[in-house]
Image (cartoon, rainbow, N blue to C red; front, side, top):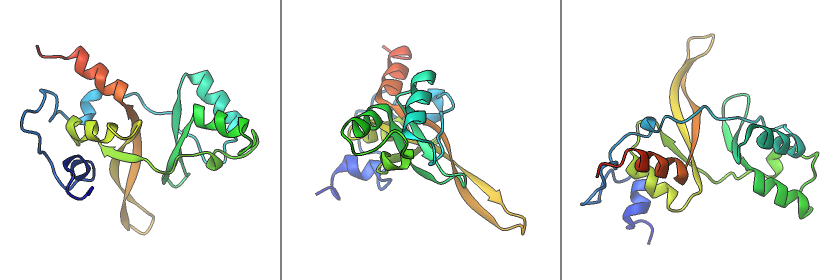
Length: 165
């Protein structure tokens, strides 16, 4: 059962740490990865335009975020092309038709150990930062901002560059 699976428990925030012989990088915070600011697409961007933007900017994927800041999902170059070529979407359709809405989020303050547990099952995680926002009435609410997208390659690059032999 996933409820007693330690990796599931870590990924979902129920356990902080269960690994006895942790690698040197296990407790380092995600913010140390020095991720570059992500390319963000609005939900009305067409599949054609998304493909052009991703190719031009050299990205494989990008978060799709509503103007309100709500993270709707991820659009990937391969999924978009596959959907269009299979006839499940048109080039003129908005990217909302081809997004992955199942994705994991991780905070800047979370550990690389937690990230590694997420990346065992997912190709990427969206790095978010919670920020308090106030409206005109002085009411406040927490808003998640996309800080980056992290992949196994980002983690591997960090570990190999900083390997403490």
